[in-house]
Structure formats: C-alpha cells, structure tokens
Length: 338
Ligand SMILES: [Zn+2]
Image (cartoon, rainbow, N blue to C red):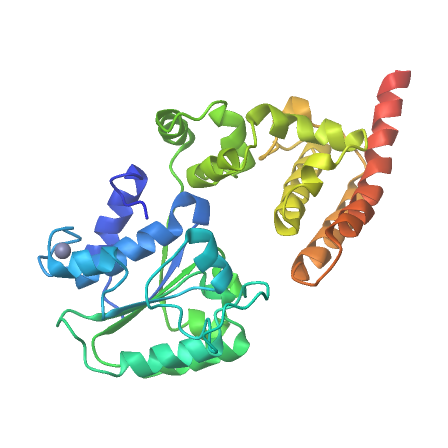
C-alpha cells in the first residue's frame, strides 16, 4: 500500500487530521483515485503509532499496522475490494463464513456479520494501549442493516475506539450515520502537481488519462495499467459515433457504464456551452439535443444502480449505445452537409 511518501499530496491532510481530529468517528470523503484508502490507513496507523506524532514506521505498532496484523486495527472492506487490492490480514470478517473458496462473484458489500463482529471486537480491551481503530472502506458498501448496526456503536462507542468511514460520496450514507461523525474532505492534487507526479511514474500521455480519471492521479495510473492509452481514450467518442464499441465491451460493465456517464456529462456540458471534464473538447461531437441527452443520462443512472444484476453486459451496452448513436449520427450528417 502506498503512503504519503509515495503520494506527496496526502502528507498535509494526514498531518492536519492527526493533529486536529478529536471526535471518535470521522467520515473521510475523497476520491479513491486520489488516495482515499491510503490516507485512511495512514491516519489509522498514526493513531496507533507508539512513538507519536506518527506514523513513524519504526515502532512495533507501525510495523504491525503496515503488515495488516495490528490487533487494535480492523479494516472492513468488501470481498471484491480485498481481491482487487490483494489485501491480506485477518480483516475479512465474515467474508468466508464456511471457509471454502467459493466460486461466487465476490461480494461488493460490507456485510452486517462483519460489522457486528467488529463491534464486539471494539468492546474487547485494546492490546497495545493506544486506541482501537475501525476503518470501513468504502463505507457506502454497507447496506442499511449493516449501517444500522454500526450506528448503535457510534451512539455508544466503546472507550478509546475510533471509527473511520472512508467514502467517495457521503450522501450515500444514512443521514443518521452522517450526523454522528465529524467530516473531512481529501482534495485531489492540483493538475500541475498531478501531471508532474504521473510523469515521474513514467506515464505517457498523462494529461488525457488524468482527465479520464476525473483528475485523480491513482485512477489515471490504474487506467494505464489496464492498457488504456491517452489516444485511445480521446478517440473513444468518435469510435462510439461510428458504432464501434469493442473497447467498451472489453471492460467490466461498471467501468463501461462509468465511461458512458463521463461521456454523457461532457456531451451535456458541450451542448450548453460548458467545459467538458473527461474528454478533450475536440474529441467530442457537438450534440445539441439536450432533452435527449438528459433522457440518456437518466437511463445510465438507472442501469448503473443495478449494475450488479446478472445482466448480459453486451446487451446492456448495445441498448445504451443504441440510444446514443442517433444523436451522434444526426450531428455527424448535419456537419457533413454543411
Ligand atoms: Zn510508529
């Protein structure tokens, strides 16, 4: 896991949170591609560091936290994220209740059993005398039952326990949870710093990929590691206009849907004279039909809410692109006639 030594824009927020956070429950809001999890874990480590102000990376507490084996640190994350991050440790909670290696799709939820176990754990005495820290990432992966279980703990916290909810959008959390937590927001680095950092990582065409990731440098790096080039990203709107959606179809459905939402956002921005956020302006066809775009946007949201449904990804994409293409073609033929 990267630290603020690798991601320099995290250093100042980490220092401020470590020195300024007094409550027992904190919502840390920020982009996952901006280092949200990294910051949450380093803050947890700072609270557990035995040579404060930490994290010192030298003491026993820090070593245990870095190895994911600190007895006073519990990280709850869905199986899907554990797999993605190759996360190891004893934090799986209820991930594999029967101990078998299930072939089921990994869960994208933080399960209520895991939350209940964590609450029981928070009431046991702490092992190393600093604090007990429970991290939930992403916190909106709790369903309502799990969130309600956690709520009781936030109302009557075990002494010395800190709860850290890391989430991209706090609006996805129960209002009752939000009202019991302090809040802090992690901003992504400014564009120049992000580009410089991506350059140091050896990324070609960092600008286009940083845009593709909505300004979040780790997101850009991840897209590159998936084999996406800046040119391929910039060429995507035109490809789709020509009915070629091979690239989208090769991605996992949630990523393909997210990409279509980015495209929709930018087409809508263009159609009302705004500035696109994800694609270069010159890469976008100028679709003017705002009403049709709004309708498409609602349809994308609807499908996105049910992206875990065992749909045929190809059919979903075909249907969504079927709605987009007449808009793009109309424009292309008008431009051709002019
Ligand atoms: Zn330490």
